[in-house]
Length: 370
Image (cartoon, rainbow, N blue to C red; front, side):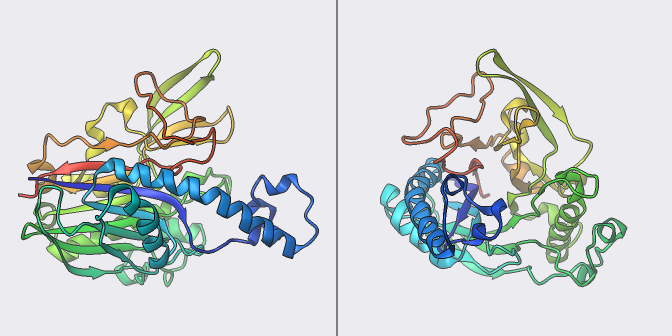
């Protein structure tokens, strides 16, 4: 018997409209920029119509990608609130797979846009093992000073000791699977953003993600003990907004694409995998086949990378040494270049850029909880 564990950034699962594009063109959708809009009232009417028309196709594709994971437990990122989660699960996911994710967990985090992490679970696994809720703990309140993580690198980018570490949350969820304890840490680290202070978006925000990763490790070590923590049964799941490697893309669809794997000097992932504390099990896949997101800012800047992670504790990774995660890519838009041999049949109505299931791909792994 086994448990299927998944993570997926569902990209803006919102139950409210965002009208900030009227005053800030950076947030205005490109289709509205084609039209002359006379005032804010008209803008709001058009934005409502655009959003509603776009959302139904998008959420059908999101649900298809989630259904393809066949997961028993799903960690989600970019969920607006419990109401949005319930409406999506009932209106889309339930209609595809029937009775399934009855239990839903989320708490308000620190994100300025209001997007939170969440967890969906079945009552029982596909193999009949009971999944029981034990305890949930938000860590959104933690500051750098609370756990002594403030440093010169954070000060350099304007952070203060009293500010909160997590840009969203580290949601700690204790479960029992077939009577055995299993803890999930659901996270969504600081986004990279654009270039600033002479640094690219990734390097300019790296100190925050390093602190977030260090805080997650500290939470786990404080909970279980420094020596015992790696030997307990837990997983860290979510969007780290960081990568240890990339697949650089050159060429084009007419002359052919070239794909070149490259290693990065370091990432926040190193903090969580150092000394065998946990394992990024996606690395069990071939080097060129670990990506979960396509990034582009035009032909001069294109790469595939892994931003979405399932990290297993040393003990859990060891007892599942043959488990190789799956990456669901059928909801990716047609603009995403696939390395040779990785092509998939896209879901119906997938567009060149949109609609799509998300800009991220779900990751799922099948585990024996022993």
